[in-house]
Length: 299
Image (cartoon, rainbow, N blue to C red; front, side, top):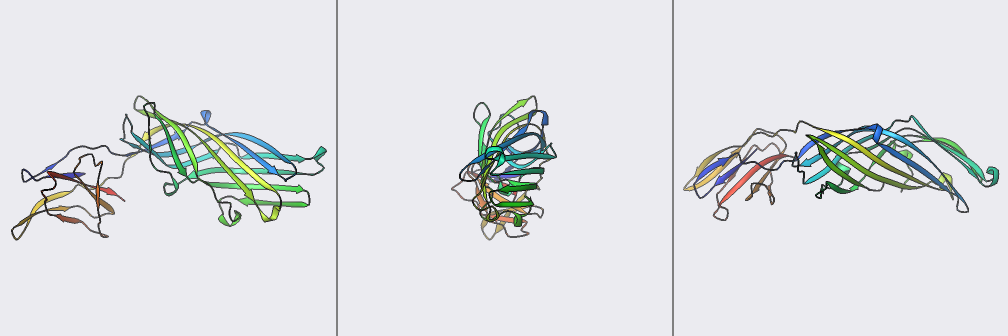
């Protein structure tokens, strides 16, 4: 909710609309969504690759601004993608008849997550609904079971991808890019996007051996609007202090940010610092602004 102070008339005006960002929950259609995995083991003198594919399901959350067509910007804030295959199996044989060694990897219950704190900035849509959201840092969970017997390295073990202590130092996930398209089927938004995650892994236990892991995904999902978090209405009234006239804004307690702008669309907004638990703000009218608009939003 926001209010405007009309200085030229000395009255308060309320209720002008603005473009709002709305959260939408998208459900992934597993019949049209998949991930192609490829893992290359490089021994230096030779290397071998194996690959596997799996359909995926899950959900994602995207903020659309405005929250109805035509949408100007999109920000995918949460992703929960799960492999529909319980096990993804990869096997390798090095040299003629496997004389240099063999290896097997099994990835179990693989899941790719993106949380709001690690999501990239909002991206603008072009006239066809295409967009590119950069700087997304994924989190992988699942179990990797391996059996390696290659050129003097013989080891069986497992890696819990969700346990930071199991990930070798220096092998943190790199940001990836989402290239997508948003269209509408009536009132239902349809989201398609591709992504590629690539990670090079080196481990002291596998000295001289490098693993290159790539995951290329395609997602097709349909959305439904989520209930947006509400903010309280701003109550406002004139306040006289001596001979000066001021405006008092008041609201119910909560963790909010107060913004002011000369534009009802808040294209350029000034953030007013609030202390914890603050529920009112007093402003003195200024001739620099014919009118000012105020709104609360969640932190």
